Length: 229
Image (cartoon, rainbow, N blue to C red; front, side, top):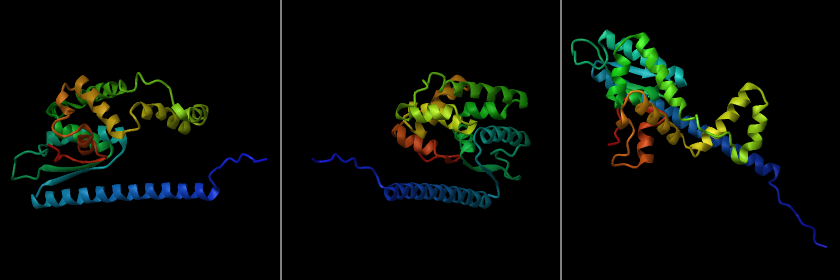
């Protein structure tokens, strides 16, 4: 009698896959670090050549994005935000990463967003930020709590400690946008630009494809100017 055998990955194979995944993540992290370092170095050199001020903004999600908008309003009132006064230093170069790049992308590419941020006062900026966040929330309002093949993991996370619960809650969100970071950020900008600062041109297809353009504008690391045209 022939016995049916079930082939399962050996512990060595599993360990090898885990080590490969860890190595891939390490390489991605190192690449992101060197890109950020290069971006800041190039921006700094440009600012030094022009005797101007370099605005370098670090990451930090929503806190970073909101903080940079507040800095922008202050810089504008100080008269150093990209003006044409050659007698005094001006901010004409900006390098941003992660959450700050969400700010810099809109700030550089949308006149309406720029005006909403630099004009007014702290109160008006607070109201604008609240409206922005409310508009962004609409990108998640109709997402069903479906985790697909990861449903068991979501069920476990829902009854676990807060950190795991929050991670599990992100799975339906990621699946809804095809596990694509550019798609998520595109939805964020599309909602906020149309609902808050009335600039549908903030998101466009143009002559390049949506994916190529999103890689340029929605990069995790962004300059205040982009070469995609």
